[in-house]
Image 1 (cartoon, one colour):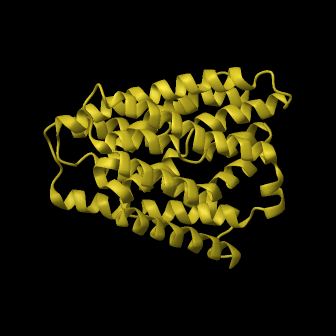
Image 2: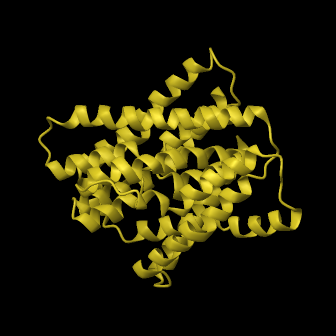
Length: 308
Protein backbone atom coordinates (compact mmCIF):
# COMPACT_ATOMS: atom_id res chain seq x y z
CA UNK A 1 0.00 0.00 0.00
CA UNK A 2 2.97 2.30 0.49
CA UNK A 3 3.41 2.32 -3.29
CA UNK A 4 -0.10 3.68 -3.75
CA UNK A 5 0.46 6.54 -1.31
CA UNK A 6 3.80 7.39 -2.93
CA UNK A 7 2.16 7.39 -6.38
CA UNK A 8 -0.63 9.70 -5.22
CA UNK A 9 1.88 12.00 -3.52
CA UNK A 10 3.62 12.40 -6.90
CA UNK A 11 0.29 12.99 -8.62
CA UNK A 12 -0.66 15.63 -6.04
CA UNK A 13 2.65 17.45 -6.60
CA UNK A 14 2.17 17.43 -10.39
CA UNK A 15 -1.40 18.76 -10.08
CA UNK A 16 -0.27 21.45 -7.61
CA UNK A 17 2.52 22.46 -9.99
CA UNK A 18 0.03 22.91 -12.83
CA UNK A 19 -2.22 25.00 -10.59
CA UNK A 20 0.68 27.21 -9.47
CA UNK A 21 1.95 27.70 -13.02
CA UNK A 22 -1.53 28.77 -14.13
CA UNK A 23 -1.85 31.26 -11.27
CA UNK A 24 1.63 32.57 -12.15
CA UNK A 25 0.40 33.00 -15.76
CA UNK A 26 2.99 30.63 -17.12
CA UNK A 27 0.17 28.38 -18.35
CA UNK A 28 -3.01 29.79 -19.89
CA UNK A 29 -5.92 28.28 -21.83
CA UNK A 30 -3.96 28.33 -25.08
CA UNK A 31 -1.02 26.60 -23.41
CA UNK A 32 -3.36 23.95 -21.96
CA UNK A 33 -4.63 23.16 -25.46
CA UNK A 34 -1.08 22.95 -26.81
CA UNK A 35 0.04 20.70 -23.96
CA UNK A 36 -3.03 18.49 -24.44
CA UNK A 37 -2.25 18.11 -28.14
CA UNK A 38 1.36 17.18 -27.36
CA UNK A 39 0.11 14.62 -24.86
CA UNK A 40 -2.43 13.06 -27.23
CA UNK A 41 -0.37 13.22 -30.42
CA UNK A 42 3.07 12.23 -29.11
CA UNK A 43 3.50 11.35 -25.45
CA UNK A 44 0.55 8.95 -25.01
CA UNK A 45 1.26 7.04 -28.25
CA UNK A 46 4.90 6.56 -27.19
CA UNK A 47 3.76 5.51 -23.72
CA UNK A 48 1.38 2.89 -25.09
CA UNK A 49 3.96 1.70 -27.61
CA UNK A 50 6.47 1.19 -24.80
CA UNK A 51 3.93 -0.87 -22.85
CA UNK A 52 3.74 -3.38 -25.72
CA UNK A 53 7.32 -4.46 -25.02
CA UNK A 54 6.61 -6.14 -21.68
CA UNK A 55 7.44 -9.83 -21.47
CA UNK A 56 4.81 -11.93 -23.23
CA UNK A 57 2.63 -14.20 -21.11
CA UNK A 58 -0.65 -15.99 -21.79
CA UNK A 59 -2.02 -14.61 -18.50
CA UNK A 60 -1.59 -11.05 -19.74
CA UNK A 61 -3.01 -11.98 -23.16
CA UNK A 62 -6.09 -13.42 -21.45
CA UNK A 63 -6.24 -10.23 -19.41
CA UNK A 64 -6.26 -8.17 -22.61
CA UNK A 65 -9.27 -10.05 -23.97
CA UNK A 66 -11.01 -9.94 -20.58
CA UNK A 67 -10.53 -6.16 -20.24
CA UNK A 68 -11.68 -5.60 -23.84
CA UNK A 69 -14.85 -7.65 -23.31
CA UNK A 70 -15.56 -5.98 -19.98
CA UNK A 71 -15.06 -2.48 -21.44
CA UNK A 72 -17.43 -3.18 -24.33
CA UNK A 73 -20.11 -4.56 -22.01
CA UNK A 74 -19.63 -1.64 -19.62
CA UNK A 75 -20.12 0.95 -22.37
CA UNK A 76 -23.17 -0.74 -23.94
CA UNK A 77 -24.97 -1.53 -20.70
CA UNK A 78 -23.99 1.82 -19.19
CA UNK A 79 -25.33 3.87 -22.12
CA UNK A 80 -28.65 2.01 -22.20
CA UNK A 81 -29.15 1.95 -18.42
CA UNK A 82 -28.32 5.62 -17.79
CA UNK A 83 -30.51 6.75 -20.69
CA UNK A 84 -33.49 4.72 -19.46
CA UNK A 85 -32.97 5.96 -15.91
CA UNK A 86 -32.97 9.70 -16.74
CA UNK A 87 -35.25 9.89 -19.79
CA UNK A 88 -38.25 10.98 -17.69
CA UNK A 89 -36.33 13.37 -15.47
CA UNK A 90 -37.16 17.09 -15.56
CA UNK A 91 -33.75 18.26 -16.76
CA UNK A 92 -33.37 19.63 -20.29
CA UNK A 93 -32.69 17.45 -23.32
CA UNK A 94 -29.13 18.76 -23.65
CA UNK A 95 -28.45 18.14 -19.97
CA UNK A 96 -29.60 14.54 -20.42
CA UNK A 97 -27.08 14.13 -23.22
CA UNK A 98 -24.29 15.43 -21.01
CA UNK A 99 -25.33 13.25 -18.07
CA UNK A 100 -25.22 10.10 -20.24
CA UNK A 101 -21.78 10.92 -21.65
CA UNK A 102 -20.20 11.95 -18.35
CA UNK A 103 -21.63 9.01 -16.41
CA UNK A 104 -20.47 6.30 -18.82
CA UNK A 105 -17.20 7.48 -20.38
CA UNK A 106 -14.09 7.75 -18.21
CA UNK A 107 -10.99 9.91 -18.55
CA UNK A 108 -8.89 6.91 -19.50
CA UNK A 109 -6.31 8.84 -21.53
CA UNK A 110 -5.37 11.74 -19.23
CA UNK A 111 -5.95 10.03 -15.87
CA UNK A 112 -6.44 6.27 -16.23
CA UNK A 113 -3.33 5.28 -18.16
CA UNK A 114 -0.94 7.54 -16.20
CA UNK A 115 -2.23 6.19 -12.87
CA UNK A 116 -2.07 2.55 -14.00
CA UNK A 117 1.45 3.17 -15.27
CA UNK A 118 2.49 4.69 -11.96
CA UNK A 119 0.89 1.96 -9.84
CA UNK A 120 1.35 -1.21 -11.90
CA UNK A 121 4.05 -0.42 -14.45
CA UNK A 122 4.00 -1.45 -18.10
CA UNK A 123 1.60 -4.36 -17.54
CA UNK A 124 -1.02 -2.14 -15.94
CA UNK A 125 -0.52 0.46 -18.67
CA UNK A 126 -1.04 -2.13 -21.42
CA UNK A 127 -4.34 -3.29 -19.91
CA UNK A 128 -5.44 0.31 -19.35
CA UNK A 129 -4.67 1.13 -22.99
CA UNK A 130 -6.93 -1.76 -24.06
CA UNK A 131 -9.80 -0.39 -21.97
CA UNK A 132 -9.04 3.06 -23.39
CA UNK A 133 -9.18 1.68 -26.94
CA UNK A 134 -12.63 0.12 -26.49
CA UNK A 135 -13.91 3.17 -24.62
CA UNK A 136 -12.70 5.47 -27.42
CA UNK A 137 -14.43 3.33 -30.04
CA UNK A 138 -17.75 3.91 -28.26
CA UNK A 139 -17.01 7.53 -27.31
CA UNK A 140 -16.17 8.68 -30.83
CA UNK A 141 -19.13 6.79 -32.30
CA UNK A 142 -22.16 6.57 -29.98
CA UNK A 143 -20.87 9.27 -27.63
CA UNK A 144 -20.17 11.74 -30.42
CA UNK A 145 -23.64 11.21 -31.88
CA UNK A 146 -25.30 11.76 -28.49
CA UNK A 147 -23.47 14.96 -27.62
CA UNK A 148 -23.30 16.51 -31.10
CA UNK A 149 -26.78 15.43 -32.24
CA UNK A 150 -25.20 14.54 -35.58
CA UNK A 151 -24.41 11.37 -37.51
CA UNK A 152 -21.46 9.11 -36.73
CA UNK A 153 -18.25 9.75 -38.70
CA UNK A 154 -15.68 7.00 -39.21
CA UNK A 155 -12.96 9.65 -39.53
CA UNK A 156 -13.34 10.43 -35.82
CA UNK A 157 -12.15 6.89 -35.08
CA UNK A 158 -9.31 6.50 -37.58
CA UNK A 159 -7.90 9.98 -36.89
CA UNK A 160 -7.36 9.26 -33.19
CA UNK A 161 -3.64 8.38 -32.69
CA UNK A 162 -4.19 6.92 -29.23
CA UNK A 163 -6.69 4.37 -30.56
CA UNK A 164 -4.49 3.47 -33.53
CA UNK A 165 -1.40 2.97 -31.39
CA UNK A 166 -3.44 0.93 -28.88
CA UNK A 167 -4.28 -1.53 -31.67
CA UNK A 168 -0.63 -1.61 -32.76
CA UNK A 169 0.55 -2.21 -29.18
CA UNK A 170 -1.70 -5.28 -28.82
CA UNK A 171 -0.26 -6.70 -32.04
CA UNK A 172 3.32 -5.98 -30.96
CA UNK A 173 2.71 -7.60 -27.59
CA UNK A 174 1.25 -10.76 -29.16
CA UNK A 175 4.10 -11.36 -31.64
CA UNK A 176 7.48 -12.76 -30.44
CA UNK A 177 9.49 -9.79 -31.77
CA UNK A 178 10.79 -7.21 -29.29
CA UNK A 179 12.47 -3.93 -30.18
CA UNK A 180 16.19 -3.43 -29.52
CA UNK A 181 17.02 -2.00 -26.10
CA UNK A 182 18.12 1.42 -27.40
CA UNK A 183 14.79 1.89 -29.20
CA UNK A 184 12.83 0.86 -26.11
CA UNK A 185 14.84 3.33 -24.02
CA UNK A 186 14.13 6.13 -26.50
CA UNK A 187 10.41 5.38 -26.46
CA UNK A 188 10.42 5.23 -22.65
CA UNK A 189 12.09 8.64 -22.38
CA UNK A 190 9.21 10.24 -24.26
CA UNK A 191 6.57 8.11 -22.53
CA UNK A 192 7.89 9.06 -19.08
CA UNK A 193 6.43 12.55 -19.61
CA UNK A 194 2.92 11.07 -19.56
CA UNK A 195 2.14 11.24 -15.84
CA UNK A 196 3.59 14.69 -14.97
CA UNK A 197 2.31 16.37 -18.14
CA UNK A 198 -1.24 15.03 -17.87
CA UNK A 199 -1.52 15.89 -14.16
CA UNK A 200 -0.13 19.41 -14.73
CA UNK A 201 -2.85 19.99 -17.34
CA UNK A 202 -5.50 18.89 -14.85
CA UNK A 203 -4.06 21.19 -12.17
CA UNK A 204 -4.11 24.13 -14.57
CA UNK A 205 -7.74 23.43 -15.51
CA UNK A 206 -8.80 23.28 -11.85
CA UNK A 207 -7.23 26.66 -11.06
CA UNK A 208 -9.64 28.51 -13.38
CA UNK A 209 -12.87 27.22 -11.87
CA UNK A 210 -15.06 29.39 -9.62
CA UNK A 211 -15.49 27.59 -6.28
CA UNK A 212 -19.02 28.97 -5.82
CA UNK A 213 -20.31 27.73 -9.18
CA UNK A 214 -18.36 24.51 -8.83
CA UNK A 215 -19.90 23.34 -5.56
CA UNK A 216 -23.45 24.74 -5.79
CA UNK A 217 -24.84 22.64 -8.66
CA UNK A 218 -26.59 19.58 -7.20
CA UNK A 219 -26.85 17.97 -10.65
CA UNK A 220 -23.08 17.97 -11.04
CA UNK A 221 -22.69 16.37 -7.61
CA UNK A 222 -25.15 13.61 -8.50
CA UNK A 223 -23.37 12.84 -11.78
CA UNK A 224 -19.99 12.68 -10.03
CA UNK A 225 -21.40 10.48 -7.26
CA UNK A 226 -22.87 7.98 -9.73
CA UNK A 227 -19.81 8.03 -11.99
CA UNK A 228 -17.13 7.64 -9.32
CA UNK A 229 -18.91 5.70 -6.56
CA UNK A 230 -21.89 3.75 -7.93
CA UNK A 231 -20.38 2.64 -11.27
CA UNK A 232 -17.09 1.31 -9.83
CA UNK A 233 -19.02 -0.36 -6.98
CA UNK A 234 -21.06 -2.28 -9.55
CA UNK A 235 -17.88 -3.12 -11.49
CA UNK A 236 -16.25 -4.36 -8.27
CA UNK A 237 -19.22 -6.62 -7.56
CA UNK A 238 -19.06 -8.07 -11.07
CA UNK A 239 -15.32 -8.72 -10.76
CA UNK A 240 -15.68 -10.40 -7.37
CA UNK A 241 -18.35 -12.73 -8.75
CA UNK A 242 -16.38 -13.41 -11.96
CA UNK A 243 -13.27 -14.27 -9.96
CA UNK A 244 -15.06 -17.34 -8.58
CA UNK A 245 -15.45 -18.80 -12.07
CA UNK A 246 -12.40 -17.62 -14.03
CA UNK A 247 -8.70 -17.21 -13.35
CA UNK A 248 -7.32 -13.73 -13.83
CA UNK A 249 -4.29 -11.75 -12.73
CA UNK A 250 -5.02 -9.29 -9.90
CA UNK A 251 -3.96 -6.38 -12.14
CA UNK A 252 -6.63 -7.41 -14.67
CA UNK A 253 -9.44 -7.13 -12.10
CA UNK A 254 -7.98 -3.94 -10.65
CA UNK A 255 -7.84 -2.37 -14.11
CA UNK A 256 -11.52 -3.10 -14.71
CA UNK A 257 -12.60 -1.44 -11.47
CA UNK A 258 -10.28 1.56 -11.57
CA UNK A 259 -11.14 2.39 -15.18
CA UNK A 260 -14.78 2.69 -14.07
CA UNK A 261 -13.82 4.83 -11.04
CA UNK A 262 -12.12 7.55 -13.08
CA UNK A 263 -13.47 11.09 -13.61
CA UNK A 264 -15.59 11.65 -16.75
CA UNK A 265 -13.89 11.96 -20.12
CA UNK A 266 -12.61 15.56 -20.38
CA UNK A 267 -12.92 15.45 -24.19
CA UNK A 268 -16.66 15.77 -23.62
CA UNK A 269 -16.02 19.40 -22.63
CA UNK A 270 -14.53 20.11 -26.06
CA UNK A 271 -17.51 18.46 -27.79
CA UNK A 272 -19.99 20.31 -25.56
CA UNK A 273 -18.39 23.66 -26.42
CA UNK A 274 -18.17 22.81 -30.12
CA UNK A 275 -21.84 21.84 -30.42
CA UNK A 276 -23.21 24.18 -27.71
CA UNK A 277 -24.60 21.28 -25.67
CA UNK A 278 -24.67 22.67 -22.10
CA UNK A 279 -20.92 23.49 -22.10
CA UNK A 280 -20.97 25.18 -18.67
CA UNK A 281 -22.71 22.26 -17.00
CA UNK A 282 -20.30 19.83 -18.67
CA UNK A 283 -17.18 21.81 -17.70
CA UNK A 284 -18.38 22.31 -14.13
CA UNK A 285 -19.10 18.59 -13.68
CA UNK A 286 -15.76 17.49 -15.11
CA UNK A 287 -13.88 19.98 -12.92
CA UNK A 288 -15.78 18.85 -9.81
CA UNK A 289 -14.92 15.23 -10.61
CA UNK A 290 -11.22 16.10 -10.80
CA UNK A 291 -11.34 17.41 -7.23
CA UNK A 292 -13.39 14.44 -6.02
CA UNK A 293 -10.89 12.12 -7.71
CA UNK A 294 -8.17 13.11 -5.23
CA UNK A 295 -10.14 11.31 -2.52
CA UNK A 296 -12.30 8.69 -4.24
CA UNK A 297 -9.65 7.19 -6.50
CA UNK A 298 -7.26 6.76 -3.60
CA UNK A 299 -10.01 4.86 -1.79
CA UNK A 300 -10.69 2.60 -4.77
CA UNK A 301 -6.97 1.89 -5.17
CA UNK A 302 -6.84 0.88 -1.52
CA UNK A 303 -9.96 -1.33 -1.77
CA UNK A 304 -8.91 -3.11 -4.98
CA UNK A 305 -5.39 -3.60 -3.66
CA UNK A 306 -6.78 -5.37 -0.60
CA UNK A 307 -9.39 -7.48 -2.42
CA UNK A 308 -7.32 -8.56 -5.41
